[in-house]
Image (cartoon, rainbow, N blue to C red; front, side, top):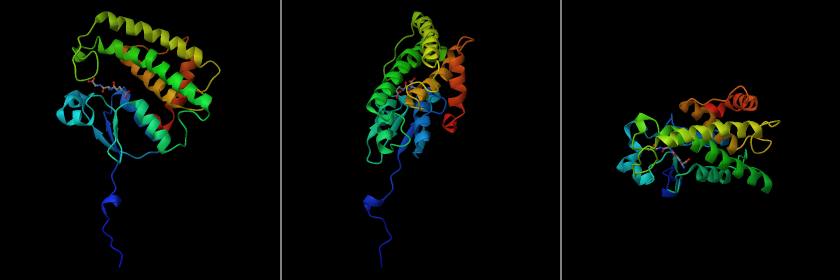
Length: 223
Ligand SMILES: N[C@@H](CCC(=O)N[C@@H](CS)C(=O)NCC(=O)O)C(=O)O
């Protein structure tokens, strides 16, 4: 008679995703995981209650940021870039980081560019102006004061970024390659996050509007 009791190795350990539903960075990872069809157990870390700074969460991520992903073997990934690299290796199809060496280079390039010139510009504008983020101008365990000039500069950078993105999307369906990639995920989240600082694609940004409508219609965008 076979023993039906699982031994230690057979006990299922879920992959755990530390999330906060309304924040942009965990949304990037949620969209990526949804596109890949990777199931995870979700734990909400409520930023409204500063749970990202709690002792319990510091044990998961001493950097006090969300998202974080805990793998079956206990490995913890605390950056979107790391989560994307793991997901691509864990479940290669559909590929989101490029197929050929050249495509992989392009996805990494555009993802970094969108992150640095777009996402970070919104964060700079928001975190240096929002009354709810007084002394929280930078994420992490250490408090930093707001610098109003950085808020203004962030908004300026963001407006330039919209021009850059619109130019890149001329005659293209997707940002990095001819298929949907992680760079599109980062840009979708950035364009939606930009509304928080009252910046939206303008009349001269028709390419962004066309691309945004298409990527927003994907089921993963609601993840
Ligand atoms: N490098 C991280 C950045 C994550 C990040 O900045 N997350 C924000 C939420 S969108 C956060 O954790 N904020 C915590 C805070 O404001 O204290 C990633 O993209 O994975």
